[in-house]
Image (cartoon, rainbow, N blue to C red; front, side):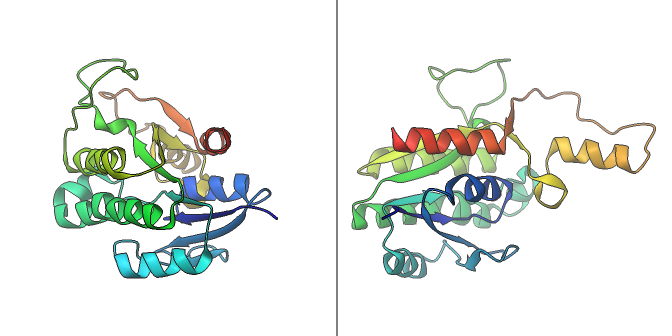
Amino acid sequence: MRKKLYIAGCGGMLGLAVYNVFKKFYELKCTDIDINEDWLTFLDFRNYNDYLKDVVSFGPDYLLHLGAITDLEYCEMNQDEAYQTNTVSVENATNIANKLRIPLLYISTAGIFDGLKEEYDDWDKPKPFGHYAKSKYLGEKFVEKNANKYLICRAGWMMGGGLKKDKKFVNKIIKQIAEGKKILNVVNDKFGTPTYTLDFAKNMKLILEK
């Protein structure tokens, strides 16, 4: 019998990669507030009771919490929504995983660092700047402090969702080229590590099974 994996917030480009990597090996239940695939069902994971009921009814062996508001400007302008989505929902996931006595896999971000250094490693202490970073880091700290069994994976700049899903840097450049632009609008004051969604999903599976 295949093990069961519940994936919350699976409607984005990382969710698509996770679905494609894990579906061959696990029985999946994939949920999101945005139903943009036929394999998704609706869940607003900010609502603890709905989240709990849906996970309990599926009875998974693992809980994977993916979803977040990742638009930095939007988080600055909508702080309450940012913390509800990026922090409170993670508290919900942690409590549910503990209740069901299953491991929680939480996806955080490299954006929890302040950007004052050119390179960061595992030994650097996070210094979140802005409400997106702060809301994600608060989620991290809650998992670390309260989850009975957990994994936290930090992603860099995501790419690989294709034209439909990818709203980040790489696809923005591709769209400009496809539109025949002779001059490209490019952010030139930031450095980041591109994270290919499919590779990230494969490594998530490897770490989870180890």
